[in-house]
Length: 128
Image (cartoon, rainbow, N blue to C red; front, side, top):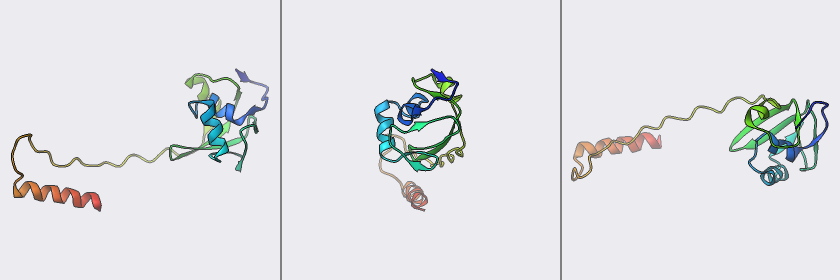
């Protein structure tokens, strides 16, 4: 599983093995599309990665900056996968709080003028 001697491994196999992508095919497609870079250069799926390389992975609108600590050829469990790299990317920003619109009881009838004003104020806050 782990190559302690630092043997080179294909980049598509490595990003799949350390659970950056669900399938090997998805990993290969991401590499072909330029979403995976080794030491700042776009590469092909067959490019070799060794310990010490920096791998940048763009996934789900977030960039992961990984330093390769160990090379693995087969997919490993999540706890083992986390020991194969160090992620130097900052954590994603916290999700923005979105207030809920004013609630009305079901069957309460037509909204009052006060209800309508509250709803308009809520919509105005959302638009900014």
